[in-house]
Structures are given as structure tokens and as C-alpha cells.
Length: 156
Ligand SMILES: [Fe+2]
Image (cartoon, rainbow, N blue to C red; front, side):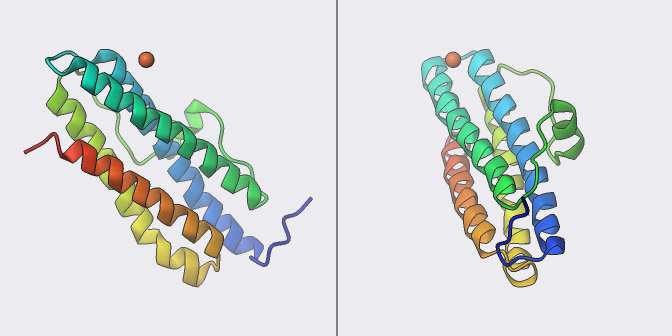
């Protein structure tokens, strides 16, 4: 049954298109963070292992919330790895066990997600009239800002 929530079909479709790309980005960042949780080597092993675990747990929650937000708009989220890889704006790098490289790669991805959310927020609210999703992605942006700050604090 159609979601009759006061947003036009065209606007819902526009919002869902943005959310599916965000969903793809979150999956790539989740996988990268988990990869580093497994493959870190260095003096700070346990600290980084745990830091990455906390972040990928948070990203797993975000993934679920983004997908369910798409369902609330009456659409279907993407759900296949090949679709996420097609849609994502993020890059996967070669394997690395090195802290600085890992932290820089993760930070760049968080900052890219933050920037892309910030760019689309006004359109989401003013053009597509979706106050709910605007509020939702603003909260996600803040979560990414906090994760980015923590990663950035390891770099000088
Ligand atoms: Fe683990």
C-alpha cells in the first residue's frame, strides 16, 4: 500500500535516490572499518581494534536506519553488494595494516559523507518538503562528525 504522508511521489523518489547512495556509502565505510578492526598491526592494537569496533557497530545501526527510512517513504532499499558498489561515491583502497593510513582513509570517507549530506539538506527540506528525512540525515551527519573528530584526533 502506498505511503500517503503528504510528500509527492516525485519528491519521495528524489529523497530515496539520495538515501540509497548514502546506504551504499555506509556499507562501504562499514566494511572498511571492520577490515581495519581485523587487520591493524601496531603498538596501539587493542585501542584501535576497539575504536574500530565501536565505529562499525554505530555504522551498522545507521545502515539499518537509512534502509528503514526508505521503507517509511514507501520504497525499497538496495540490498545487494553489487548494487552498493555501483552506487557508492567512496573508494576502496589496497589492504593496509598501518594506523596512519587506516585512520586517514576512514576519516576521508566520513568527511565525504558529512559533506554530501550537508549539500543535500536544504534541497531535502525546501524543495522536496521532507522534514522527517531532513531531520534524520542531520542527526546522521552529527554522528559522522563525532566519528570523524575521534579519527582526526589520531592525526597531526
Ligand atoms: Fe571482532
